[in-house]
Image: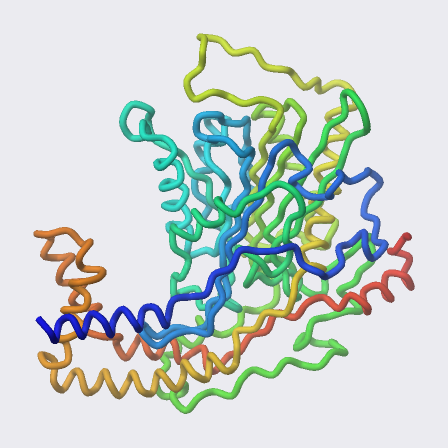
Length: 499
């Protein structure tokens, strides 16, 4: 028993050492488009120029950063979660009209089909990386269950909405460091007011037009006084080819290119030297998976909110105009760029349990000027949100030091794996006990298949797992922020900057 306790203590210490660091986000110091004198479109922004100008909309981020780990072996974590709350109340009990639009279905969004069918949103919207859709979905379920004891019993089930982009160029996406509790933390951190942008939350590891991308937001008003409405957009920008970038109509990508791209006048970002373990222990498939992706591709998620009393069908019409705003930044919608739009209105709340058989609702006319103003507001706010994502981003790297460390760990791990295979019973005795005190304790008694799987994992990382981590050592990726000074000079020279 003393040995088992000691093994469990060591396992707990290793787990704590390898736990990713998480932070909630503050508003950054890099300038936004309008602070640089860049005016996109003709409509006026809201007070904050963010999605939080709409009603009681709230945004929260959790950013996950660390330098990788050895137990289990993995590369650096450069990822996170961003949530958008339609209001500060119980969204399951007080739903909002919503629509879900697919620009290009090369993605893994969850919950969209029910929004399309029923026309309501009943959870916060969560954004994260591609392989963490499941964890984010579970986090939203946990949040809804905690506030609504009747879910799954007398109130039916809940429909979480989650969308994703791949941050695999900067984040070891296979490590699955995003967990359900990160979503709960992001929801708890959600606030009205200014929104942190760039390399934050779900945007931590994203690349846009070859530059560091991430979270961006903007808003537009259709006028002032009675009858005016606000439209706000939040984007997770992870798309576009460097040459295609346009800002304010100026083909920025023709003159200003990220390091490492052909024709770039900037210093090239050199990948870290491969560790000694990389060529021999990393398989071709794992190495290619860890190498930086080619320029372009990626994905984009747009969340739209409006104070206009639009129903689900009309919100779908607004959502389809988001593509115009994306196109104004230069993209043509690549094959590999999964793009989704989630739109909702804060004009009315729809009770989960209606007080009557019929509900009255305000109607948004479509034969007057209002609908066109809303379409324009969507396109302008989406365009500016993408530019703000680029301007707000700070440099993020896959960390050459961490990748070299992973490579060194891989050498050690391969040796340990060889030793373990020579003495299987002795090598596996300790870790299996540790697993039974940790992950296996929740596996459920009597499930022999699950117990066997837990035992296999607990026996220690395989040579293949160590090789996968080692692949990071051969391909350091860097997300470089768009150089603000160079951009301002270029726009001034080309007439795209208006003070």
